[in-house]
Length: 195
Image 1 (spheres, one colour):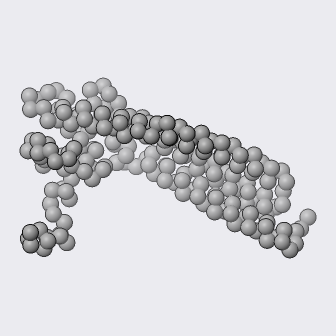
Image 2 (cartoon, rainbow, N blue to C red):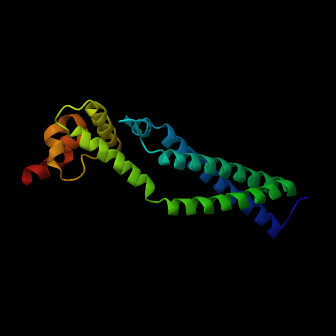
Image 3 (spheres, one colour):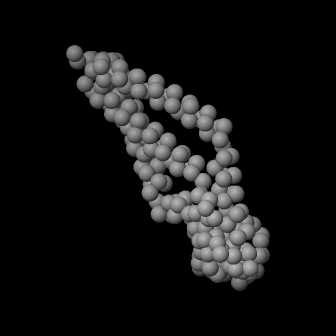
C-alpha cells in the first residue's frame, strides 16, 4: 500500500533518521573494534607484571561498545528497510529492538556510573606497582618487566612519569620516555631560545 502526502514525508523522515542511527552504530562499532585491536592499546593491556594481569575492565567496556554498535546497526537497518517497504512486521521488530536497546543503554549507564572510578584506579595501581619496581636500583628480577610496562604506558598515553618526579628521569629517562618528549618540538625552538 503506497502512502501519500504527510504520511509519505513521515516515511522518508523515518528512513533518514534510521539511516543516521545505522551510521552512528557503524561508527561506534568501528571505534570499538579499533580500540580492541589497536596495537598500542593491546600492548598496554596484555602486559603482565609480577603475575598481575593488566586490568580487564577496559576490555569489558570495549566489548559492550561492540555489542551496542552491532545492535544499533541492526536496529537502524530494520528501521530503514521497514520504512521503505512499509512492512508492519519489520517496523514491529524495529520497535522491539529499539526498546531492548534503550533498556541496555540505561543499564550500561547505571553500570558506568557505579564503576566510574574502577578503570582508572586499577590502571593507577598497576602503574604504581610497576613504577616502584622500575625505580628499584637493587637489580630486582622483575625490573625489565616493570620497565616494559612503564614504556607501554608512556608510549600509549604520551606521558612521562608520575608528575614532577626527578627519580624517574635520573634513572630511566632515556629508555622510557618517547623521543618526541625528550627533544623539543622543532616549531618551538625559538621560544625555548628566547627563554
